[in-house]
Length: 200
Image 1: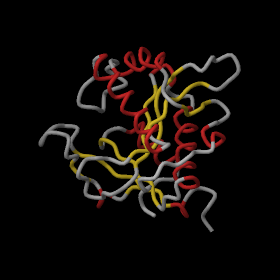
Image 2: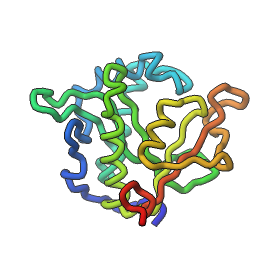
Image 3: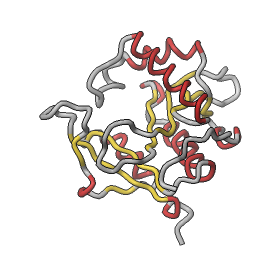
C-alpha cells in the first residue's frame, strides 16, 4: 500500500531502538526542552516562524495523540546511551500530511533535533529507525520527505537515507504564502525496494 491505513498498529519496540537514540512516546518533561528547541531561530530557520510555549506544547500533544490513536507518528527522540537518562533531543517519525499536496496521499518522514545535537549523525540514526517502521511494520510502498529548496542540511540527510529527488516533483507548499521565500519545496522519494541494501 502507498499509505498506512487507519487501523492502529502495534510497533515492535525493537524497531524504535538504535545504538545511540530511541524513538518513544512523549512525556510531560519533554515539553520544556521541546519549547526551547521550537523557540530557537536557527533550529526553526526553514519554518515560517518560531513557536511560543503554548504552540509548542500543543504540537507535542498532537504528536502523542496521533501515536495513541494509530500506534505511530512523530515520536520524541531520546539519547539511548548508558547514563543519558532518556534525555529528549528532538522528534522524528512518520506522518500523513493534511495539506492538499500534489503527491498526496502519502506518508512523509520528518525530523527536528535541538541544535546542540546537530552534526553527530543522530538524525540519520533516528530517521533510519522511522523508515524501518514504515516499510517493515506499516508495509508502505513509498515514503516521501520534503523541505524548502535551500535547506541543504535536510536535503543531504534525505540523500544519505537513499531518497531521490526529481526537479519535476518540486512544488509550492500550500501552507506558505504566495511569493514567500520559503514557498518552493523539493520532494524526495524512497520506494520500499530501493532502500539501501535492498536493491538487486
